Length: 317
Image 1 (tube, rainbow, N blue to C red):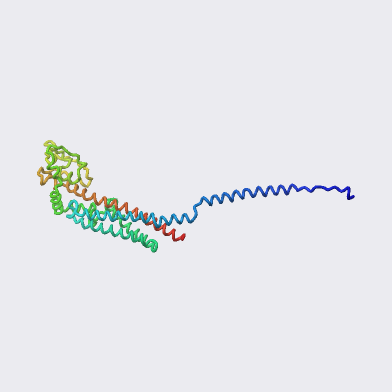
Image 2 (spheres, helix red, strand yellow):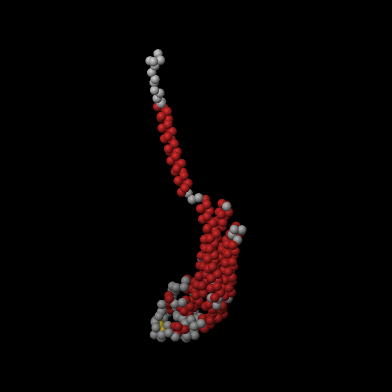
């Protein structure tokens, strides 16, 4: 019996091989997915890099940019002090207003840099103070630029203020007229070539256009720049379509009669001369208004970004 016994080889069951293959197949996607997650995590910037970027912005770029912006306040304040007595403005008391504006710009310069210096200790109070100061400066800039028309006679250098000071006050205008004459506003036309025929009015300063020549609507013929005669067959026009605006149409017909060929008179008593003076003076205040609008918006954005960067730095630190 023992000799006749046969040894049967033991074979692995098919189920075992199938299970092994299945396990191998399932581990491969898991390995791939883990590799993908690792690669994605490698692509994301680490938190340390983000914090370093925030530190650079909070401690370097934004403060330097804000300081450079504040230097423009200092420069404009010096310019206002230098231009204090320009264009006979001292008669209107505007040099005092310019001095006050210069002091205000210097104060904003100091407050802005103090907020930069104390931003880490008192971030919220520094931001609140700057927002209040810059919004006030923005409001004043809108008033001077004419965006927010302030019809208050107490607020200097606005449209209504000039109207009350110049158009309705004959004593003040007589003083301004004498100042304009003494400064020789029309001298280059008076002593220029007698045969030179002019006269591109659009390129002339407003004072020279309004005070040294009769209005265009008077339809006068020119012998030279300061000597004009009326046409006998034409009178002043009935409809006045003027370059100075609707409000300035009043009284322009009388300017044609006020014109004299006397060098000491010319059109100094005309309303066009008054409006020319107002335009020349208001231009500087309009430029101040535009400057205040732009610089207040830029400083407001800069200080807000500094506050956010400082807050983020504190929160993550």
